[in-house]
Image (cartoon, rainbow, N blue to C red; front, side):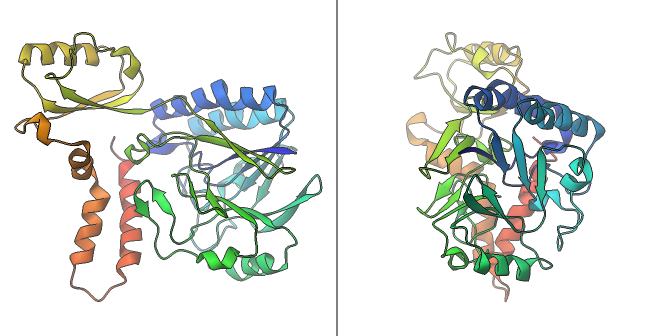
Length: 353
């Protein structure tokens, strides 16, 4: 059996931003559902964080979610197994009140929701499905890990030592040793794809924040017979950066149409021809970009001395916050403080593009 795996879809992200909503469905309608149909895939497992906001969902997002995401599974006769993630729950200490149950329970015969750990048989191949672990279900979850006959676990987990986003490692999560009995563990939650040969973070299917920039996205297909995990890339981008240096490129010939329906940062490294720069920015602003931000922090530096590393490190807010916390002379758990700051930073990104 081949099972499609997708995670961290975050419908309603960026404060119900319609630009992102349409970008998400461009992927589903152009890539994801056609792939399921063409390859006759009849089972899909969603590894959590289906919706973005824990407290509520707008009517517009809920309508699109049911009609453009849930309904196609029914039309294609695909069984959809949905694991509850931390963004799907109302209270942080229990999975009992969750958006998936409230929106979908008993409404679709092909939709199965897992708010508690459960071993599920997929044509003779047992998989332990593990939702978000919290104070209420921790003992039960650990008991299921001990008792299950499955050697494969799929869940929405925060495991110590893996990258939440590219370059930012999680610290203070669940120890990897808890899952040592399994041959394969696959998880949602972290948006960056990574693995250590046993534990696989699948990553989100598309770019949601600037932290996802230049980080390949997509979904996976798991073959229960061969145990191979195949990735299908999402070709659509939401964020682009242009490093403007007119000493190396003729920007009169630069194709600006490639940035249509994207958020663009124009980073000025070297600007010798002011008229040429103005003409390029005018063309860029007329190219139907969602937004263009011009960053000229490096205009007074020689282009030969400005590397990509310098620019990226300057823009990396979390690196600066991490260094600041490391230098604090306080009697606090600094790893926990960093994780809290990452969560706050991610929430803040939803407020402003």
